[in-house]
Image (tube, rainbow, N blue to C red; front, side, top):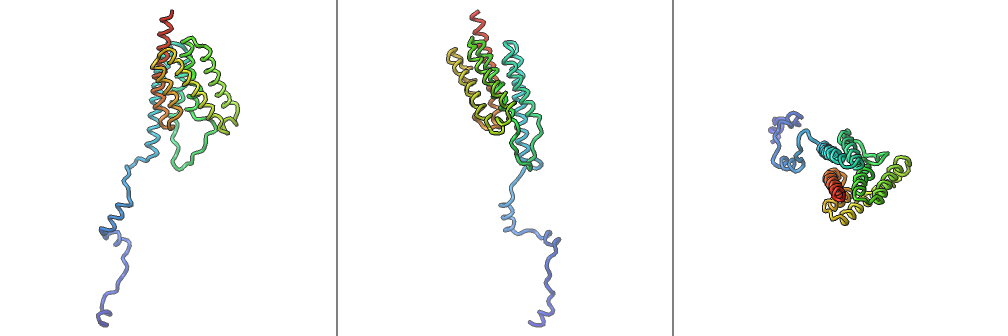
Length: 235
């Protein structure tokens, strides 16, 4: 035994190349399968999310432009509201995506969707009420949206302290309530749908807002045309 131990070749550690050439055992394969998850090559979750946001805002831009062209034939107020919404959607769709490794910083101004809440949709509802003969409600909507937008533009603390958030909710609730009242008085199903979609756009997640506003724009345009037809019938 002593002579065999002396004659046996000395054991040596495997080099790195030999370790890599050695096939892994079944236990190592099972552990590797549990640890690794499949990922689509070349596509990151952030890129897919940015693409979805861009597509939704591009659709909102095209829909708003179409509504603006049709509303222009009725009255200029709602056409301006749809056009403003199209511009806001286009700027959001064309904005560069934020890198994943950059932390999110609160913006120094309200988000673009907030502008649509306090100006675009109230302008369209303003036109609906003007056509129905309710000038008082139309004036209240226009004044409230303009006042809140002016505060956000001229009072920095209004934005930094977060006061613009409840103010935007107030304008959206006022717009939806006025449209619902108009629908109840005129028996308009389209007006009730528009009121519900305007309110829903202020309650869903930010990524769903453009899709809701696409449907809301179509419903608002339908309400506007209904009021135009009713006004022509009265004449």
